[in-house]
Length: 452
Ligand SMILES: [Zn+2]
Image (cartoon, rainbow, N blue to C red):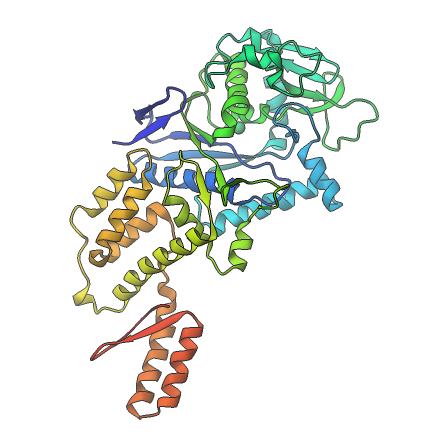
């Protein structure tokens, strides 16, 4: 039985979707204007574990992930520059080129981490018609008002607006939100559609209500969910920073337009810090997957490091902790590598109860760190089937089997050289292998290889 912590009710709840053969999941995706850093990727990695655990429990999934290529301003509220326009200026490209480039780079990082691809990669600009019709519905239902820069959602007309995030709107009115436009009726009101004023250079623009404009950032998620999944969905996931503004606004929009609940379960992952500090450009502590690879780490080392903690806990990333994660992953691979080299008659059978125990630990709100402790303890006894099961859950690229034939050939060449007392050649082969990251263990009658 899978239990997940539901932010909406602040409690651990049994996950029992209405249709186990069509579990509807939406995960908020990136704004595609720069390279994602480790903090951005941590969410997609945690949600990948969620998807795999759901599958292991026998559910069939339909997951949609959005790609924000318009409307997200540098502030999560409705002020500042459009992030895509900012990226275009920085790189001397068009906004469309920026979006295309960062979408394809995001997708290739996704592959690199072996994350399950969504059923739909939903690019916000492909849902403009749906977004407009959502605005029209909200307008018709009396939730919107017009200011000089756009159409705003009047949050005072949605009495439960503050409930999801337990917002203290009274204090917000006192000025907690910094960019309180004087035309806004309530500080928590937000733009669903922004107008482009004459002379403004916003490149992405669509005619709507007789003038050019573009959708507000929060709108796309409600529009995409309505089109691709249909409310209510089973799970909506994102970062905890989405709770007070973005997800609260999504709920208000969907409810205001369709009078429907948006999602049954809301899952939120916590922040990632780097050396105890918040990740920010100004601190210069942004690390990308590419940076880790240049330092000799595999993206899977980072993934394993992340699963050593819990998605709801704040995590502190350090290179030395990543080193330990790398060693742990190598030790697991070496257990598997030894199995490849055993004759079939000596291969162990699946360890009784092991796979069920791992799944039941994960079924407790994705408790991967406890599952990892069990793997360490049982690793010498695990079978190929057990490792395959683990790989289906964590996708840590533990199977490096393709290296085996070439390595076995080299080991044979070395052993022949040793038999002929040609130790110089034998040592040369051994050193070559070591430089490729492979060490050899000689037993009385056989030589085994493993990762050095
Ligand atoms: Zn969203």
